[in-house]
Amino acid sequence: MEKVTNPTVKTLATGSVLIAKQMQANAGEILPAHLANLESILLVQEGECVLNINGKDHILKQGDAFVVPPEIKHQIKVNKDFKAVHFMPKEIKFTFFK
Image (cartoon, rainbow, N blue to C red):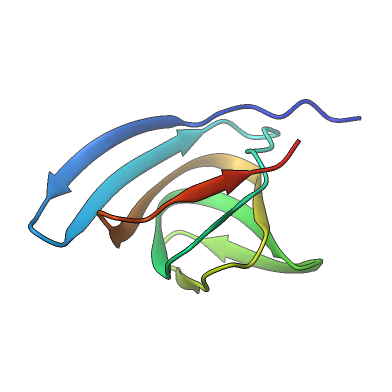
């Protein structure tokens, strides 16, 4: 069983409705599986990851953006040292899985 690691997270900007958070993780790390109640967007700044949504892998590289749908379980595995910005509504709520 592979070890799940929390990414380093830094808030970049907060508006009246939206928040932008930078996520950072190292190659080989697996981030926690979770879902959110609202749609969000992930924009990869550096590196590469595999975003698994409902069993389907999406490879994301520098410059790629992905709309993460609400109420869908997803998880990230980092292929190359990774940095991304996650744009989301401030009222978003996350549910994490073991």
